[in-house]
Image (cartoon, rainbow, N blue to C red; front, side):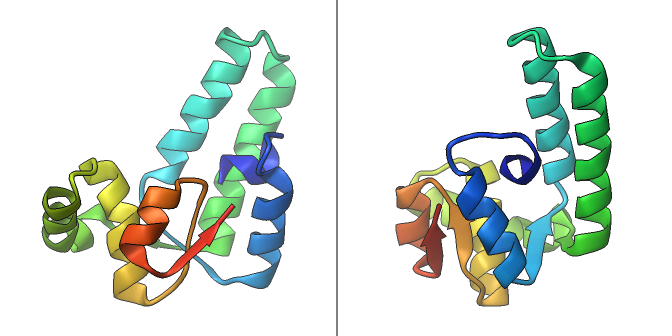
Length: 122
């Protein structure tokens, strides 16, 4: 999600994916995006006012443009995916969501894509 609003190598591909797909996510991206914004200000000395505005746009985008699925709904299947594939539970949540919803997993992590088999690698 952050790549749509905060420039990084996969930003163009993320923006194209956003335009061409209905977005579904677990309830973690708000925390993740806020952490990316924090890093931009504290570690890379980017302008706090600009980053704060960008963060607010990201939050609004997630709330209005994405279907957000509760982590609780995915715990059991994602935990099994994590154990079976020796990946973090956090990563397994996104794989579990992609498998459950039968949608592509948009990721830069090729290993996660192989696990889900429904992948579009950014």
